Image 1 (cartoon, rainbow, N blue to C red):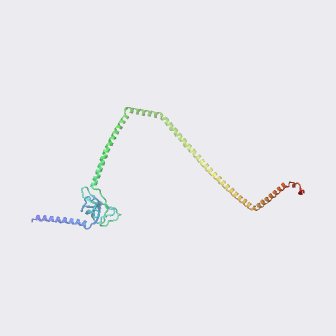
Image 2 (cartoon, rainbow, N blue to C red):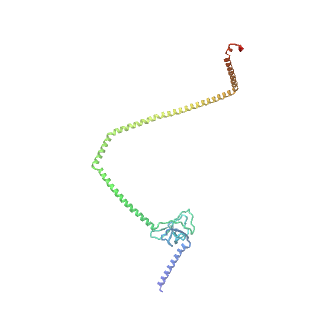
Image 3 (cartoon, rainbow, N blue to C red):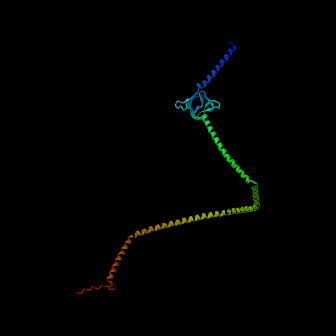
Length: 318
């Protein structure tokens, strides 16, 4: 073996050893001291083991496995390994993404909130679905169809608008023709002459209005004290009426009190004279009976008023 062959073999062996060492170190960095998590997606979008995991846009780890979930095969379970110290929390959200249009798909994790609780190892990171390329293509096709329909409708509307614009221009041309311009000039000239003739009258009317306004201001200023005096008179009348009303009420109250006392006195007098009134009534009754007896006696013997002695009764003849 020549010296050149020995040197070449040594160089290739050194390069192979260096590459093996680098690969071993990288694998040791991500496998030996990483923190494992998992998340679930409805659409994986070409994710596979070895794709990057980005936390707030920075390289944070690698995907270790992508497989259908055993509990729900309609969901894709994504296992990932993150570097130590990555602050994944309960508000962090994992979704499918990519760094650029030509790069491989990657798993994007949002930073979440600093006040949220940190997720422990082997925890499930909340996920959010990203639209797939097929969905985006369908939406773009729908938008294109809507745009074509809108353009067609706009063309129709523009045609009508163009026709209306032509009609408007024709009307404007007819309005601004030679005869119409001559009439407008005559109207403006007549208006200028009218303003020139009636200008002094208008100025005079304005002066009169100004004078009337000044007189009105003077009259209002003079009426101010009269209004104040009227307010004072009304207040005095109100106070006088209030005094008279109070005085009448006081006198009425005194009269009622006197009437009450008089009634009380009469009641006492009547109660004290009850017995005497009874005797008087009895005497009147006795006198009435005596008068009745006297009247009956006079009816039977009217001559008793003349003769003192009564004649003897006649004997019956035998």
